[in-house]
Image (tube, rainbow, N blue to C red; front, side):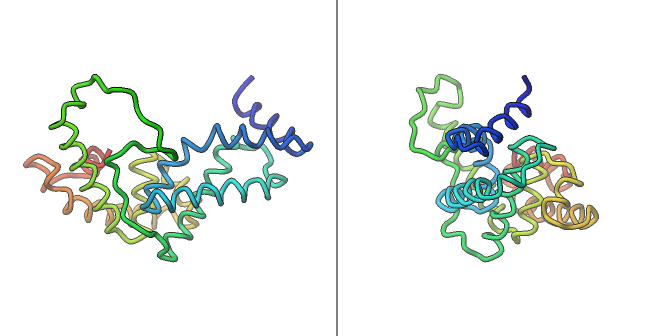
Length: 207
């Protein structure tokens, strides 16, 4: 059975009154949704608020889910729209730092045996992530959104335009301007050729 059919079965169960099925849908989606919402709104507290609002909204509007796409795609649109509404209202409460693990809870990671677990490597990675997030936070909300959706999420221009309610040409122009701003701010992370970097260099740096 495909995941899409699983989604439809769970939605049907929820509509039939078995609300625990919605909890399973939430459990499937929340960890995948959290990173994009986090990067859009810029703080963990705001990201958790948006996710909670998105799942409540999804439950309330479940009769509007037609099954033409996966439940994740459907709730993703709701979450992105809520995140953008919050961004545009300027309600982000504090700057994002990715020096800790991404996730909704305070779970502890197991010991890391990889080379990146060396203290100097961790410090470099934390500094790099802080620079990237600082650069993202400095962008205008609409510019930040296209960078997050394209360069972090890998969404197609058409998808981004549909999500944000703007023409594809506007997506491209905003992305071009946003990448230019990021490029200037992220030069310390790039090699000497970064001054002539193209879009791929920006994607490489921020990811």
